[in-house]
Length: 349
Image: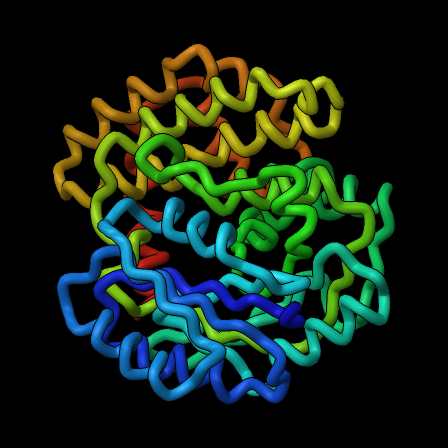
């Protein structure tokens, strides 16, 4: 059994793929398997995968018809035989000791998961992103629930003082997961054709089953932001419909009987107006933004959610933003959304 199965979903990423694979085959931990799942690429990605698979017998290449990144990762999970799984996007790359450090910590602490830090790469350079600070932390069962599971779902209490950290725990990169838990509990990615974020749901399901998690302040992963072929770029059709599907799916979950998880769930719904407005802004017409946001803010699920948002913890500008949303002051909400989006885009340049 390999120590770690590294799963890489591949789709039309020939520009970045070589660097990604080279960073994996050069890992200091040699007892790994590398599962490249080509999701029907139409560029030279498959050819690059084939070349590397001939060079390194640890590489297993799976070639399949295009079905999307969620199904592609699920295919990788089915094929994985390692003790732990690491997911690496095909435009990202690893530090040389990523697998070794994460695996050794997992074994040392008998952990279900190890969370580590990463670099966010862009055309402007990189910025370092820590998760919990500079000290190593071991989370046992109660802390996994309160300090990982709940904030993965949404921000509550003091965490609302820093809304920018909403998705800190959501990504599936910069982590390793115990394969046994994933397979025995049948944890899978749901298709992005149905929901807005497959990572949010995957991590929610996984950490529900976890009793020991380790956080280490090691920067081991490079996440590339400037790949415009990424699924996170461009206008996303039917994004609101996907949020509604996710909301209705989650409302059926028995876990939401927990008061704190329910508050986190409502908080996530409230904050979803940020990507929803940002998505509509990409159409560039204010009237379309206004019509879409009026529909969203008048939706019964959103009306209900804003009754539970803990406004007293929010910074002042976010209080104003969500006050407009709660009271369905759509015109003012759209103006503020446009301004905030403009400031965010300017900061990225």
